[in-house]
Amino acid sequence: MLSRVVAIHDISCVGKCSLTIALPVLSAAGIECSVLPTAILSTHTGGFSGYTFHDLTGEMEPIARHWESLHLPVDAFYTGYLGSLGQTETVRHLIRRLKKEDTLTLVDPAMADNGRLYAGFDGTFVKGMAALCREADVVLPNLTEAALLLEEPFRENPSREEVQALLRRLSTLGPKKIILTGVSYGPGKIGAAAYDRESGEFCEYLDERVEGSFHGTGDLFSSAVLAALLNRRSLPQSLAIAARFVLQAIRNTVANGTDRRYGVDFEHAIPGFIREVLPNT
Ligand code: PXL
Picture 1: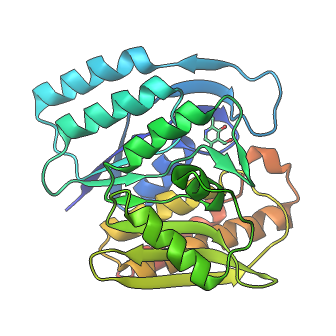
Picture 2: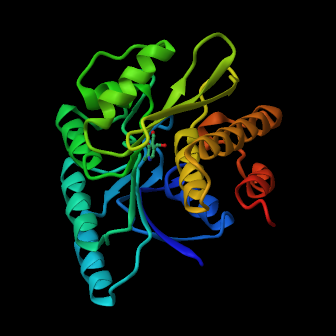
């Protein structure tokens, strides 16, 4: 049966990320993606100057009320980039009201990378995002976001033991599954590590590191992990499927030689992703 995800992210009109990634990736994986846009920007905030930003907080509550009146069944909430501190509260309450016992909540605390908060965010926003993470079943931070959520200093290349300790500490915030991205235990490799608090198991998937920074890959990875989990792939399988999809998109982008600010060429990696996430097609 078709699952319905409600994706709560911004619309960056240009520069593939957030909803312009969540929608095509989830749809390709056979999942209905309903949207709750948090803000509309002319481009994302990571590389273009002069971008516009229109906050949509005022629309969120009326939309949620209408959905409540429809008794809209939601299989998963998927939150990403939120526009303001107030929105972390709005989203937290909205999910509480609309979720059922078996609804999955995946929070990607999209707020920082490479040791730095994204433009426009501060320490109070981090606290709001940490409160939202406490409501989640699955959280998916990168190393920078993990340090911020735990109020610890950022460390660039933690060892496997340090990563596992970090995963355990993150699980004490509340979520059952923690997936940490940007993990690398040596030169030339990068990937993700995860911890399932219920089974007590750790897993990881590392693959080739392509040098450089590629915009939107965090959103691509999160969307692909959610797509895999909803297609009943295990946590280790979901990490592997998502990481290979992101790597292929990065390889395509390098081969094309396009301006990295416009995002990665994930479109040509979709057929391979579908073969892995929907193996019977
Ligand atoms: O990819 C994360 C993201 C999402 N949305 C907006 C962003 C960013 C990262 O910079 O600026 C608007």
